[in-house]
Length: 162
Ligand SMILES: [Zn+2]
Image (cartoon, rainbow, N blue to C red; front, side, top):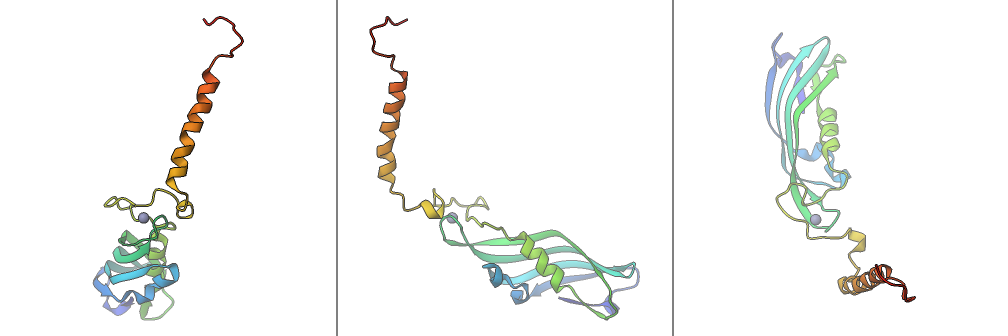
């Protein structure tokens, strides 16, 4: 994502809107697969020897749920997106590092398929504990109640109950 400084009107902002091939985001490195293009809507302007850009970014991605290990899609949206870049003399300013960093910061460290609230994750246990057979846990429950009942039972030493 590059901006030609000469295209920015003096004292005004340049509106940039469109779609970009998301390969430059390097999402695969983060274990995330981009779905469709990066959509952007930015206003770019100049101030104090720097270039600023404000607007929004949106990238649909495919991630793997940490609980059920199913893949699911989610929109990564940066709104408002804002960045400031120091001008180093070139006429062409590259917004790629800023956009890339912003999107990466928005990626969840532990993606879960039910985070969007539109579905329920089928996994009730952390991925590592899914092998625990359910019947065993049910069978263990009466034993616990038995132990609790014994705690409540008064000592059988013949003393009168109150
Ligand atoms: Zn899940």
